[in-house]
Length: 476
DNA sequence: TCTGGGGTCCTAGGACCC
DNA sequence: TCTGGGGTCCTAGGACCC
Image 1 (tube, rainbow, N blue to C red):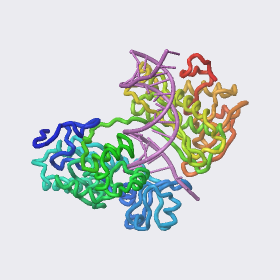
Image 2 (cartoon, rainbow, N blue to C red; image 1 turned 180 degrees about the horizontal axis):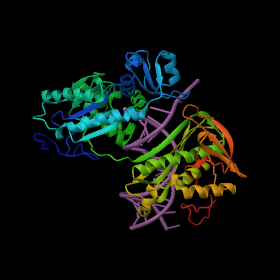
Image 3 (cartoon, rainbow, N blue to C red; image 1 turned 45 degrees about the horizontal axis):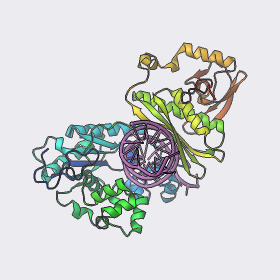
Image 4 (cartoon, rainbow, N blue to C red; image 1 turned 90 degrees about the horizontal axis):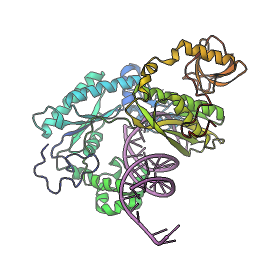
């Protein structure tokens, strides 16, 4: 797009990814859409009895937090990130729901489709939020009147496509302004910030309206006497960089002056994939932790493979009894989507930590994602879903009857007792811990290793495999 | 019954290389 | 062998977002 009438060098504000450069566009062509109280709204849409009532979606267990509160619940002081226990205290009559993510994903898909019909360039930020680049939209012009009309039509189509969900929309000359705008008139609002008025809008606002200014940054700024965006601007760039570091300070100073050159980025690929779980009670048993890590590794691997990706860096995250969090990571010589390898690396990393005082949260992640599948030659095997491979299953049962082959963490299914995972094994007997979604602790049962009702799902790596991280060391 | 789960980005130090 | 730098990769931690 041409940028007539701009002063100064084209690249002054241009940092990473910046595209033509100006600090802001000349016309209000960036739209930010945010669905109102999204998860709760989907629940109210699908269950008429919940309409007009306080609804809280989030973790319902003892250690859960609120993901979304409906506006009725917000009236009682319930908000996201609050512990569910606190939310129950504030609003005992609310409906507390665990969340139906398939339904949310489906609603989100419907919304994104509508946005894509409006412009080919959209950037989803989460299930309920996206930027739309109106420069790429089919519009006679980009006047305030024109983009306002488009937004009204867009919101009507979103409601129609989703069975009545409402969205708030902000439009401006930059992502910053569009996003702040969408928040100004929630719910079901529309705000278009006319070009030239950005600074008038921002200056009196609290610094926390700027994305990236959270509690820690706000506190530092407060101590420096900075409360509003105007204060931020007057503090000056050098001082901000001194206070917050080069990247953060620099971009904050730019944003304080409504300079935000970030483009709407159409296809952003994932950079990492991870799974983590917080347990109802702290776990101390090292064997159990190991088994849990294996299950998580299997989930991460499944997602990797579905996305046809491999990852090179395996990380674990451990939150201890005192809520302190530690992480460990290891980088493989090359990307992998081998679940056994990932599980083994994760277990090795966990072994380096002292978890004897209790683990509250455990997680596994993979990053350094590569867009190709390792060992493409064996793609057929991968697609053959070894989980149901009869020959493989027979081999495992044979091994089990010799007292081998059942390792802690192995996922299994039993015709009578349901899904579980191996807790221990030996002498022809497997001890399996069963769980259901509702009752995480479950039961521990000892079963004959050759019990025909016991089916194998995934196999933990044999201990005598070479450790690819230390090729000269034969196992541990 | 304080404090979820999925991410992104940045910093800082050390290793290592040129 | 007295003091270089710069660049890249890796790791750990932290802030932040929805």
